[in-house]
Image 1 (cartoon, rainbow, N blue to C red):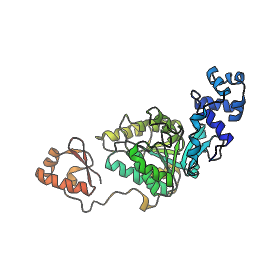
Image 2: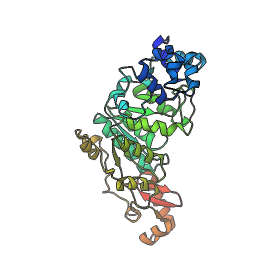
Image 3: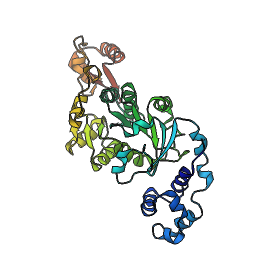
Image 4: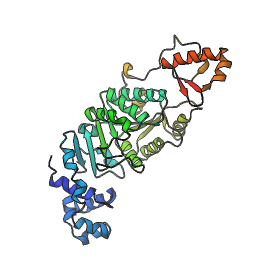
Length: 361
């Protein structure tokens, strides 16, 4: 696909080293279009940006070598570049303080302006946390919300899987160029999203997974969403940054509570203390957003415990070690180990670090 003169002007400016998105927006506000910016005199430009940047713009902006790779990338019909001037640009991003002038998009353009909801959380999630994220995402997706997350391991990946399972699908906002899959373990998931959902990045093609990029990505996750649910998060988790950004942008923040002994619940509990909505079901979220309820078959459910193994009542939902289990149950260690193996295979309990166990339902 040949790059139009209009898009070339956007690329020459957006890929110019040293010209950040805020400065580019100032130029556009003052001069109107990228073509007008590139045609302006150095004196005019110096009133808006510094002399070095003004001189670079007068010379034509970014070198062609920095944007030539975009043309072959656009040969794939699922790949797009969306600018602030395009009708497809997400209207919700215009509400945030620092909307990117240009987005690289892989997949469905129609999802960019659908009603959406973010689900984020720990990369090192528990089995129950992953199940909760996927179930909430599927229920909310089937209620018409597009699920937004960041393609990270753990909760993000589970949220994307749930979103894909429902009618609302999912958007992955990434901190790399769209020709880079990070983390590599999510490659298959990224391909599924490209086929049925959407991947979005403000970073140029070829950008690797740099740590500094992910906080910038987080503001877009919130900006695209009408609310944000934190499923599991340690007190130092980056998910709390995302939640704070969501609150700053006027989005509703939700959190799922957990055990007072679980490090992955402490971040959620801190958010709840700060005013986040405590949720136990997808219906709680939908009610707060003023949307119809999810159908029961698509809502997160608690598994039946009618045929529970007797050991389960001694494990409980808070972590417990083997010595405590033996004291509570009166069973021999061998019997406990056998029961725990069977229960783990059945998905009823989860082994935790330090030889502890936790009930999942």
